[in-house]
Image 1 (tube, rainbow, N blue to C red):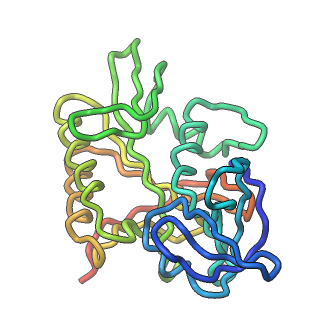
Image 2 (cartoon, rainbow, N blue to C red):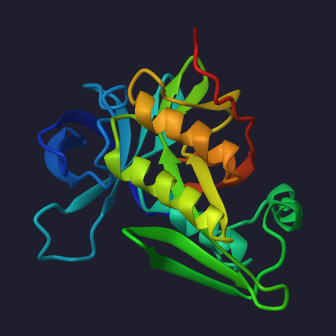
Image 3 (cartoon, rainbow, N blue to C red):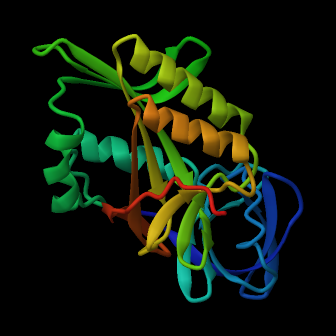
Length: 247
């Protein structure tokens, strides 16, 4: 994914959807495209990157795309993970998107072949990010994509706040698996080079336990980091997963 960004300074978040930034010393409102808490990223004075909207009627002229923490750039666009995974799966060669060969080579082992790929497909009470079907081999399944921005001691964790919706997704992926669908949860880490991915037991032990149950039920749990720059994000490599609860 490619963005057209302007360097700014983070001032404060005034509600879930709006932050104040300073661009060349002038304060401006920026849309926050992520409803997570992000308290570890939204620190006064942090270097951030905003993209100007093309809509003159929009109340916020900018969107907050990325922010720096301890010299590392974090992408906070919650729609980004879904888009880059979708593009990777359909092998779309967009001008601003490069599919890593390591990811492409893993796909046959992870998913097998498929000839149908759809976005935002409803199953029971959930709307999963992706649905795929392999007509020749009579296979079909669902993929739920989760963006990860929480980092501590170079470990990526999810969720950053309790998520009842996330728990529901896991329960219904388990149900789908029992009914013969292939089920996947793919965590897209929106920063580079964590040593591993873990569920955030301290913040949401219920989701974390459900993630363990999902794996035990045959749901595939995958994690990938990304190469994040102020103006871009692309898939990088598969990251080890550790679902164990710390004692």
